Amino acid sequence: FVLSAFFSGQAGGLYTLLNRGAFPDFMFWTKSADVILMTLLGGMYSFIGPAVGAGIMVFLESQVTTYWPEYWSMVLGLLLIVILSALAIYTYSIMINLARMTQAKTVLDHLTKTEAIYFSDHDRYTDNVSLLDFDPVKYDYYKVSVVLDNDARNYTGTATGIGIMVGDWWT
Image (cartoon, rainbow, N blue to C red; front, side, top):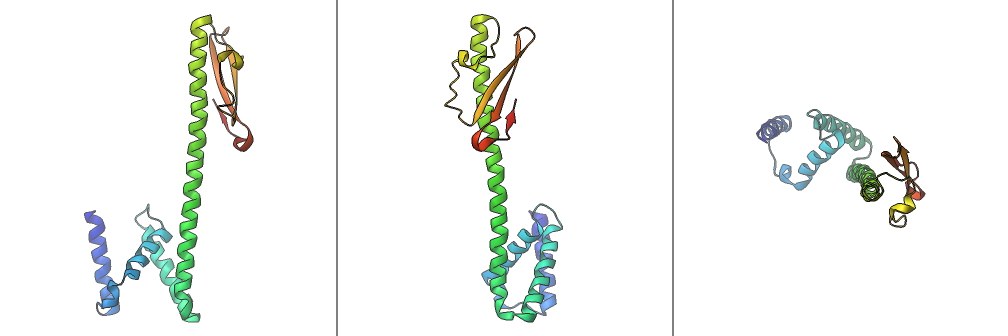
């Protein structure tokens, strides 16, 4: 936090020297929005990212205001929409993958519990999922299969995705 404040202060001082003064319009909310957009544009997970974003932003501003000065606000707004949309899509894909993994893990945990109950009653595991009192309707996106080994003393449970989960394979 202290390091961030130090570099922010240095940047503000250099910005004041560049503009040969500090003016009241520097306090308007769009200046802080520019810094946030620069950070999003360059990347917030590295030290050099906001500097790269600032370079891109200054380049875009100089190009757009040279040819179409009245459209700079529109370009800035569209840029913000594109960046936030990309972040939303990326976050959504991560959350979907996490939900898929959680659902498959739940299926296999339930399989482990039912196999343990069956083993305690019969002193061996089974590959017949219907004998396990396993409700396939409860997990309608996964087909569960069991492979026995070591004379039915060990097993491997597999959840294979069906429907919208096609391509998922969990053990």
